[in-house]
Structures are given as C-alpha cells and as structure tokens.
Length: 343
Image 1 (cartoon, rainbow, N blue to C red):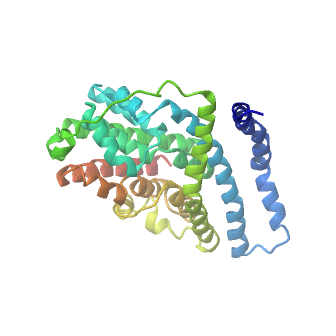
Image 2: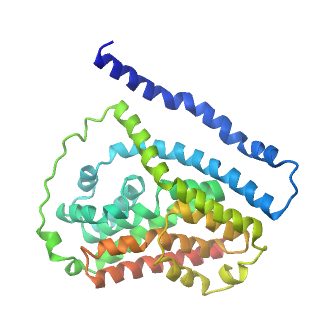
Image 3: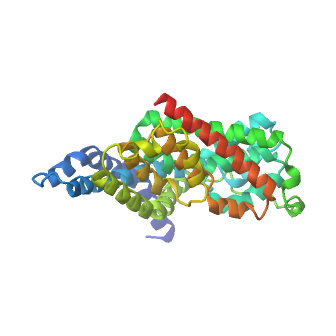
C-alpha cells in the first residue's frame, strides 16, 4: 500500500469514527442515570451516599455532552478564521457591527489569552472600538462549555436565556463604549502597527480537515477543562450532600437585594471558567441561592476575569479598562435582578 493510499485510508476512518461512536454515545448518555442508581442501590441514604451519587452521575454526563458539542462546534469554527472574522466586521456600522461581533463571538475559538493579538488585528483592520469590545465580551462569556453545562444542569430554557442575556450585554456594552468615543485611551502603539493580511487557505478547507478540526477541538478543550469539571462537580457534590437545605437563601436569595451587586464585586477578581463554576452554582441553587444572583456571580467570574483585565492593560489605558468593567458589570447586575424577578 502506497503512502498516499494509506493516508486516504486513515482519513476515511477518521470520518467514519464519529458516525460509529454516536450510537454508543446515545446508549450511554440516556442510560447513565439508571446505571448509577443501580450502582448505589443497597447503600444507606446518608449524606456521603448522596454526594457520591451526585458526583459519579454528573461527571460522565457532563463530559459526554461536552465532547459531542465541542466536536460539532470545532467543525463550525473552521468557517471562521481570525482573518475572515476581521473581514466580516470591517467597516460595519456601530450597531450592526455590535450585533455581528457578539454573534461571531459565540462560535469563534478565542479566549482571554488571545485578547491582545485579536484587539490589535481588529483595530488595524478598521473595526470600530465598540464593535471590538462586543466581540471580546461575547467570546469568553458565551462559549460552548457554558451553554453545555447550563443545559445539563438547568435545562434548555435557562441555557437559551443565558445566551440571550449574554448577547444583550455584549451588544449594549460595546455600543455604549463605541458611543463614548474612547479611542484616545487605546495605547498609541496599537494604531502604529500594520499587520500583514492574508486570506490564503480560507477557502481550501476540505471536509476531512473539518472533521480533523472537530477532533482537535475535543482534544484541546475537553483536555483543558476536564479537571475543572471534576473539581467543580466535586465541590458541588459536597454542597449537595452536606450543606443544609435553604442555607444560602439568606446570603444569595432573592430577598437579599444586595446579593446581586455583591456577587459581581466578588466574582470580578476571581479566576475560573464555566467548567469550574457552573457545577458549584448548581449546588448553591439547591441550597437556596437565587438563580439571578448565582448567574451574576458566574458571569462576573468568566466575563470579567482578572487575567483578561491584566492582558488588556498592555493595550488599553486605565480609564477605558474601568469603563469596560463598569459597563459590563452594570449589565450583569441588571441581568441578575431580571432573572431573580422572572424565576
């Protein structure tokens, strides 16, 4: 067998593997709860048993769902290279650009570690400052990990509401920042950089390449966040088994009006991601915390993380950073109160 035919055979197998594994995934996912109940059958219903049951059910459930979604999103992301994303946003009007940037932020593979090169590339390409911020806000806040975990723990209604409110925050925040005309607070050297644009390879991605991108996304993302999921669910399992019912009602309940802004202030300097914080959030809700307060805390942690702020300090002056924190923080607080009213 020649090298070319061997390579083609391997590619064919890569394409077939997802279709072979999907039925296995379906069987495991939809029978998992029954298997876990059988596993703990006969053990006394103690706090430890409840905590262990919570842990051994939620960990594989979340990882199974996350793997499937990440694989699909990895394929979708092959249609959105950094250069293509810049071209889509280039020279757009403010509001139209904010909406497009926020929507693209959901499916593009960038995080806070990409903030500096993305910001420079967008500014150099002529993307307005407010539109750039809409993209940078949406990318970490509304990602597939957060959506999968919210769907797993709280259902599709909450996941959709989270995406909708996250989009609203990124669109409105970017629009406000754009209207304030704060370009003078961007470091001068950013505007002096001229990057080399290239569209080579944008339209030469084969179906096999897209499947390979799905595998890569699973390897990179699931490998990166699985430990956060295990630790987060572990903490959640402890809260689920040992914290008394309604314990959090007085601290994070809807009757405590100050709980939403306080949760945002506490969340901003913390560093975690959706994989680590959502399982804890779910356990807190079981113990009496209100959804709006817990959601505000989560949004502040992953949408206004300290590492991202430190990275942005390299390219933005402090007045613009404080405006960014203030505008996004106020949006998160409003969402928290809104969720507390609705739920």
